[in-house]
Image (cartoon, rainbow, N blue to C red; front, top):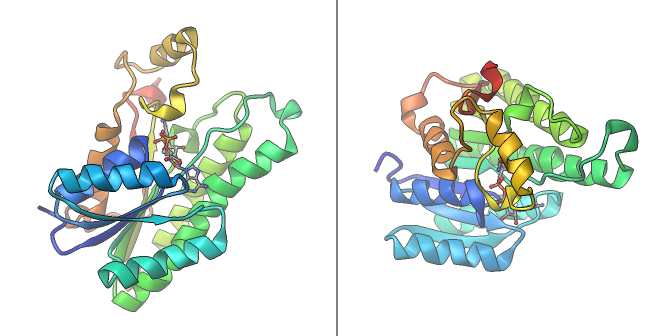
Length: 248
Ligand code: NAD
């Protein structure tokens, strides 16, 4: 595969988009650290990857906890000897309220997972990759890294900031053989959307010119490309996989 000999880390890999990314990395030959706050789902993901002939290990971490994120990178190196690829995917949706009614608690919670967590990840991944002489980071943002999500100010703010953080890393690490890009999926069929009612789902689908939601596997293909040598001249960028959502 195109990731043979590589060691890859995926956060939030127990479900949805992260799971699809971890599976595809493993299928392409990488040894994969599956990380999640949910131990049961993480272990299930590892079992699934192994049943498909891949190599993976579970390491539990809450990405909003800086000590756990530092320990996660350390465990990766202890288990597989190095870190070549990291995908900071873990994220949450949060409360849906007008900005004026948005609770301080939900704002803090969403920002701590969707922004602080990505920064903590990048911080310790970059330190390790610099020691290794190079690496690749892919941060999972959203279309809401560039357009509004009405009633989800915290989510939109965090995702815009992830795009900014990614640009900064691209600017700073260009000569250190470390690339960093962000991905902007539109609405994807994952457990994150399970809470949406039938009507809400139809309204969401209508916003996509392709007339359907995306699949986790369709996001994973872009992440694989950005994680591999095929994207060797790409850094600091933000790439959509959105069925045309932001085109209209
Ligand atoms: P999901 O809920 O299916 O999976 C998210 C995983 O992250 C879960 O396994 C969960 O346990 C884990 N997680 C949550 N908080 C965590 C924490 N603090 N530390 C570690 N793990 C944690 O969601 P998904 O749809 O696969 O979303 C993955 C990423 O993609 C998120 O960043 C999300 O914002 C982004 N995204 C999703 C969509 C979508 O429509 N589903 C669209 C654009 C972007």
